[in-house]
Length: 310
Ligand code: GYE
Image (cartoon, rainbow, N blue to C red):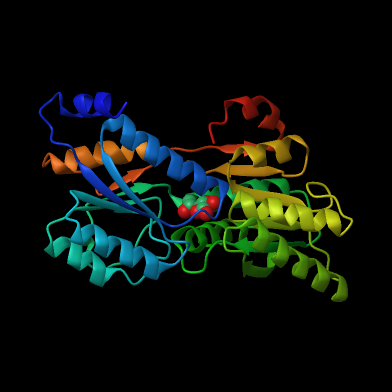
């Protein structure tokens, strides 16, 4: 298969491209699908992929990027775990003449010439979509609705933006209030742990929880476990709003345990490989490539489940 790939890649006289990819980690179902998409697309495109997993630590990503610079790869791509603190290493890549493509998550740098393109979702918009669903759901409610929020990794673009978009929209209805908000690190284990603590304090403070807004499906699935163990019904006693759209979440939706999922597409591999080929060929890339995605309320779960690719 490797030979076939090489000949496909080289048939237009391209030289084989080497890409160094510094992944965030393996924290969620979304991430697993993203990694698979990148690895498969690289094979398909005849790109030689050097891949590293940073275990959700920025220092590990920086180390990986430095090693890709030392190995003189043709292009570096990465999904930055957090937004800040990238100037130095990006400058090193630029000085070495290696183009950098961001995928999935954005960086916060003053000098945007430090990367050539950013391929990924609009997370603020995802937060707005989640908020709109709730505003609509709550339009006839006169009672206050207490929301607890499970945030993604602190300082990461999706955690910052999904919070911002959601808050912006729920402001329309004074009954909607985020009463507690904490990071669950985008993982099931942490999502469950944080939800257990929320439920405990809601009991001792005698302040019911009506809605969970989870920044990803894995944390929502962890929260569902905590709610069931606490003796309540997720999706009924407590509304569950989530982001990503992994298969497990669709199964939970079909079972009535999640009320709505805002889609975030992890299948960025093919676009990334195309972008890498273009940049190496000297073509200029759009600075921002936005992924298209939808919203899936519970009543669509059964029909949509067989179509899910991640
Ligand atoms: O939503 C979450 C993952 O950056 C969009 O990271 C990605 C997020 C995704 O861990 O499940």
